[in-house]
Image (spheres, one colour):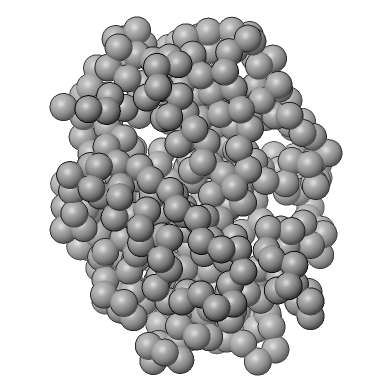
Length: 402
């Protein structure tokens, strides 16, 4: 029988711009600020993992684990860096979980960060598009200026045509997420309000990204700086931390699966790896989709919010967008999905994204999110974090600790 694992604490920066903060400073703050949530010192941590994606290509910094080990109290401990594209944060969580399960310790720290803007908060869109494109298959890059928006615009086109879904249907997802972000003090787009007509109509702030394909500006997630951290513990670890079960949630289910990197030839409307990972996470938790009323899913583009709603089992294939249009994904709906604002409006600091999904879901179950975003009677949560063109999938299930 596996040990039970618990989320003892979560912390994140406000997503958006980290300005002149250096990578060593970011990781030190992420570590110390996370353990400080339970009044602890970093020395209490036995194992750690850190997820990031553009640390070498944009920050000229490798061996992040060594930077984490510079935090007083963490030197000489088992720490590793995790890169799994946009699922790197989820990978860091699983790395820590597995270390605890094999007995390497009782308290673990999962960190994630990304710094994609310069010290003035400006971004080089062409450069970012290029370096993110490294996480696609070389055969699918030629002819694409912004590789991932192009790949997902193709997915969006297939989804819309196959299921008779309109651009306005998908725009409704972005509108709900911006509304959620308006009430989230950690969200990058907290002050930006968007109407359905604005999100569905071409205008100065909303343009088609690739000629001949339906994706528009508001269909896309943000270029974001930010960091996040989770403190994960066994029952013995909770006792050491002085954290009661009433103040944490159980990481009850977790799984990952990886599909071939090449998108061509795969059925992206029924992503096999994602479905396998989600099913396994449900199985470990002893729960099913009907038990869930909180979710954070990887909406790098609106079509993935629709597909993700299907992967977690809250909508039948082809009905994911309709779930949002019908108001079922709203904070007070059937299942509050991306009440944080999601990647589209909360922001997408790539290495921190998977950690932020789990952390926000834990806050939902503990009643710690703003009242306007709180899901009534939050009872169990799922997260779905992907990397690449629906390639790497990490899924988790959270429930109240008992």
